Amino acid sequence: MLTYSPSVPLLRPRGTHRLAVSAAFLLQGLCFSTWAARIPTVQQQLGLSDTELGGVLLAVPVGSMASLPLSGWLVARYGSRQLTLLGLFLYAAFLPLLGLATTTPQLMGALVLFGLASNMANISINTQAVGVEALYGKSIMASFHGLWSLAGFAGAAIGTFMIANGIAPLPHFLLMAGFVLLGLFLARPFLLPADAPREADAPIFVLPDKSLLLLGLLAFCSLLCEGTMFDWSGVYFRKVIQADKDMVGVGFAAFMSTMAAGRFIADWFADRFGRQRTLIISGLLEAVGLLLAVGFPSIVPATIGFMLVGLGVSSVVPLVYGAAGRSKTMSPGVALAAVSTVGFAGFLLGPPVIGLVAGATSLRVSFSLIALMGLAVAALARRAGVE
Image (cartoon, rainbow, N blue to C red; front, side, top):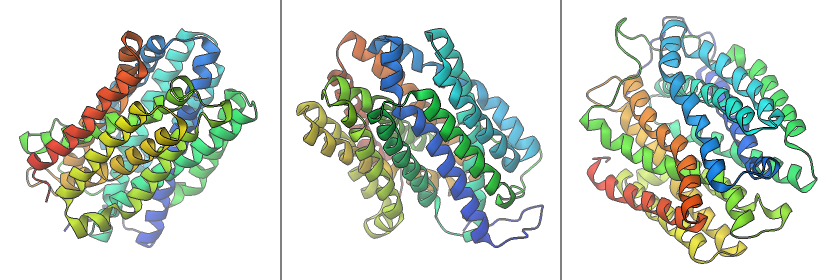
């Protein structure tokens, strides 16, 4: 069982800290989904082809990967609380820059900054979550990620409303950035004051050893699928499904709704049916959902397919993070950071690769290839030793 002995005494009940960290996950998810919901609009405004959009979206992982050593040093030096505040502030502040971009280079520059802030917030918030989970002495990671997904669903719904009413991305982004900053200000006093102590020279972010590599690959495959759905679901509905303008966001909303719901029951389902079986079922759901959307490109089967994908990806990352936290070769925080770094690479690299493949073939072909990632999750679950 994980234990938590902060160097700074806790002055508030653990439930208060859990609520504050939950709010941080909500704010991060809302910020990201606000951008994701308007990608089709931005693509149209700048006249980008699928290949060009894929190249532009590579700016996000460039910024994210560039921030990895900086974020690790900042967490070690100042703690996850300070980096959570900084990361979320920058994440919200950079959002309107995406709406201000009128040329491809401007958009790529804004996306580099957006990716940098995204990973900074991701690392620090998950470090906070590890500390809160240790306070409870049981797995609650899935609930945090469920709230992130719930925020994504809300962001998709808001984006659909904005699109249907002809509201441009910039005022939309300004409104949501203001909301995120207000939420951050309210949650600020209640975040964990300090992280669990560690050895002074122990690295926070390291490459996983062999025992954790499979967990990282599991997360990579599932997050590659998840990242594809975030960035390309709207484009898929517009270009392949040829949905009406006010229905373009339906697929993304369907995906987010089942992913959020699945994460709130993931711990119960895994306890009842076993973690390995849950991961296998999850991978198969991802593959079946994508193939359904590819094989029957109309709004009803595609929406159902996207719902299956959301249900499939919902439990993988929380279960993988939980298994990493129980590592016998690294401390929980170090193991989680290592696995999440490998996994998050899939989340960031998947969308640009989709664009490049779609440019050479079609979106339906590229989505079919992503279905293989679901099958890989099912196959790797048997080898990863997740019990």
